[in-house]
Length: 76
Image (cartoon, rainbow, N blue to C red; front, side):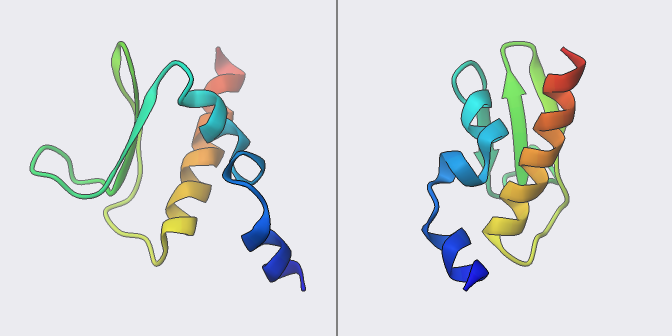
């Protein structure tokens, strides 16, 4: 039952730090020729965090981003 509950919660509820981040910064998801990572967080100053090259699921990538942004926001 817990897995179903997680799937039905909003993105804002599941990834609160990502939701907060995109108000003033942005994220990029996917591979390109400019970066090795699959997911990245940026702000006006440039790259703030980049994830791994691959993730098993998009959910794992967003969870890693949310955790990293929590740490970034705590330092600010």
